[in-house]
Image (cartoon, rainbow, N blue to C red; front, side, top):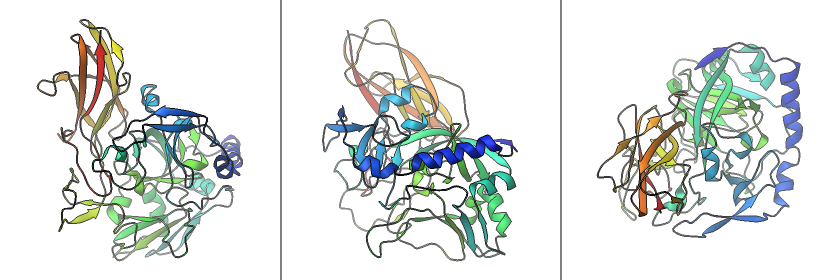
Length: 413
């Protein structure tokens, strides 16, 4: 983690104010717009194509999964452009449809309350001035990324592989903010709540909790910057939680309230929502299986992808062909990436690109000599703890934590 202590000057303040202005009416505009193009996104349960849209302010062309609340998927080709996901192509996922469409960062405040010595409130500019700034590269991945590939199919957003993104996040440590409030002895968890609200009466606000020790580990952040830019409104402006190595359900957007709890959090969004079978890292069960113990989803698992070759691509046969992609280790770093052209009987070590930190994407590349005909390429990541991607897919009713070894079939001619 890189540390520095810049004070926000006039230019930084203007950037945030301009970002807020750009967000005014953003969602209303998007809801009234129609997608003009479609992309092939073949999922086992269909449909085989999805709408592409440029209608959401601050976003380039995205795969439209849902308009209200916004679910926008990153087209997979974007991941071949670099290790950090462009801000205007970074995926979007909200749970409730009542989302602020205008936020004044001079007024929007985050409160810390509960089992603390004193309640405190901060605007984004208060955070900038009062606390040490930190930077961390980390993957933000939806718990249900790749849910559309689950068989039998499960309910929820039918994502392809594009509900993830990698960024350099800049902000302050949650630990420092909690210390300013004074966490009392006997605290158990820290609950975070954002500004989105349900449109259905009596539906529960989205609240997620971490253990006190995790919240104060010095890596969990409150971030206002993503890849050198202020957070877009659709990604949580003016600040959001960053929980490196954990699934994005904990990365609270538009962070509004932090509560220090003396009892384990039992609200709906901790139980029964976002729970997995208690057999990490597989999170696996048989459809219809009874008596399965479930626990809240937590740490991510390793994944890797081929990014420069799509299914059906034609490549030269009999000579070395460049294959490249991205990998991440989940809750730790990437130790190795291997590729196979014989169904996993033998594996070839890929060359790893620069290491941007243990929570970041890491690029890889290999040169493969392919025999003529249809060839299926496999890619497998091993993380720093020795955990490898499995050759068989998991299944659970939430459609969570898919990380099977990925394959791409190309035609060598």
